[in-house]
Image 1 (cartoon, rainbow, N blue to C red):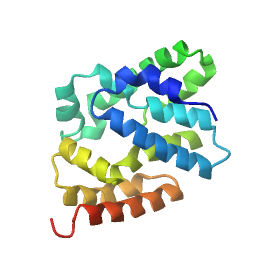
Image 2: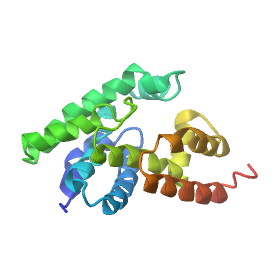
Image 3: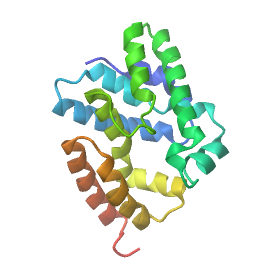
Image 4: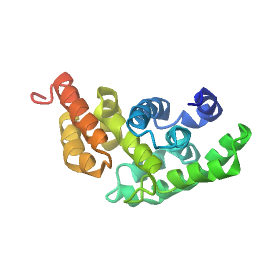
Length: 195
């Protein structure tokens, strides 16, 4: 497996928005755990995809990110959601080209990034890994803490939303197991049965 620190460093400036400098490393850890379960997956493709999947938020006004991308009625299909995906494809090409990755690899990463939030289906095993890892970090105490600010919800309400809305979106059985286990720990740590 490649040393992915070079991709992180090359994309670092694009991660300094929307808490992506927390979200992406946590999601990366989940992706690595899923990659271990699926030896047929292209580990380099899934790893690059998760590192770069949300760097497109860098190109969007921060007020628009939160008002249109997280708090509007149909936020998953908002213009800023599509824009962060297309900008992510563009910026990922710049990052990976600067590191001399082959064009075919760069295009495959772009296919994963394009639609990772707005598409209802995965196009490959690597896409499933990225899509699931992108969601799994939310089940941690850190993820709930950050997402509660994004969505203007209490931890208890957000944990309920994770169970009813996000777990059904996960693709891989291992992801569902991780989500349920992490959610139980998070609910306990945040006293969601009390608060």
